[in-house]
Amino acid sequence: MEIVVLGTAHGRPIFGRLHTSIALRTGEDLYLLDCGEPCAAGLHREALDPHRVRAAFVSHMHPDHSCGLFMLLKEMHLGRRETPFTLCLPEEAIEPLRQFLPHVYCAPELLNFPLTLSPIRPEASVWADGNLSLKAHRNSHLWFGPSGARDDGAHSFSFVAHVEGKRIVWTGDVPRTFDELGPLLQKPTDLLLSELTHMDPAPYFEFLGQFDVGTVLFHHVYEKHFEDFIDWGAMLTRAKARLNGQVHIAHDGYRMVL
Image (tube, rainbow, N blue to C red; front, top):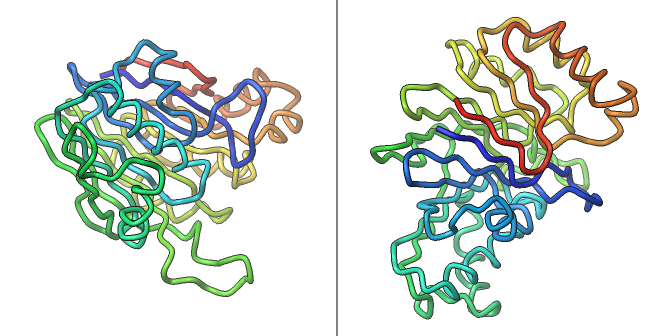
């Protein structure tokens, strides 16, 4: 299994970094974890064939996690893909997306390949095939809308995956009160794919140090955190001092074999 980080930027455009997307490769197949823009270009940049992507999973609908999906579909179409593709995203986004796709010339009936829009629901299986199983766990990243009022209609997810006998926890975006990740980390975890934008790094490192995690890969990092820790090296040193396993901070194009 290989992890290829296509984009590591946080919620604003950053020079030199693409928005959030990670490619997981197992055998000849690829899966995308989030579709920040321009994930299709990121695949090509890393010499990964978009036609090998069996499914993409969008943790929530903030634009930095979802807005690359239109060019991804267009690239698959222009490349004459014929094999089925499944796009999994929060249930409330399915129908609006279905209605919008014709306006960006990606109507499912006009594509060269079968497109399935599959809902992600809380505490439910998202995907299971011979390569990958994925289960969604709702988090509170989107529980409060712009007005400060609770919004029960917006969903954001963290995930537990099993691939090639390995257990992976993918945080998606989480709130500053990151302790809700605790239940997902109670079992030994081979790899934690964690954002590092919405929390204070120092207490987060302390929190993660409680758990049996073989490798932590930080991505989606707020650049202000680098200022707080002087540079990438200083942040990495601080993290390694608190966590039990291997620790990595991803840049665009970062690759890891697990």
